[in-house]
Amino acid sequence: MSAAIQDSYAEELSHCYGCGANNPDGMQLKTRWDGDETVTEYLPRPEHTAIPGYVHGGILASLVDCHGTGSAAAAAHRANGHEIGDGTPPRFVTASLQVDFRKPTPQGSPLVARGRIAEQTDRKVVTDVSVTVDGVEVATGRVVAVRMPDGMRPKG
Image (cartoon, rainbow, N blue to C red; front, side, top):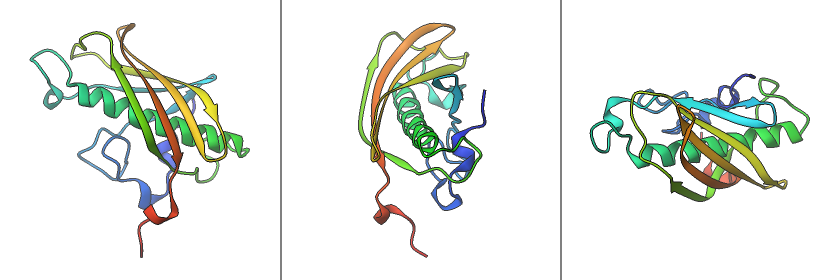
């Protein structure tokens, strides 16, 4: 597998709860290429409990969300002729997030999110995501990600 796209984000844009390297309390998600798919693995923490023994759905939604925007950045970077680690990729934000919960998600094993790029233009990338635990699909989602508007960049 390749390096993580989040490790190439601009320093001032790395504070996201789900995937920001500069957010010590966040999930620290890492999206990588695995062939034509993207993959992220995450082991939920005890505080991510919904009902004892099961992961809170918001954690699954955050995983789908940030994996989708990371996948969009990786796909756009690749479309611009770069691979992860080669320059700074464009940042994407979520325009639409759809998550379907398929089965209760047990705690104690890594969540594996796999993404496939369904649509890509210069400004928008649509990623279909499947989340599994121990090979069992527990959630699916679709993320419509758009290039981050310039007005969202930190001033200073």
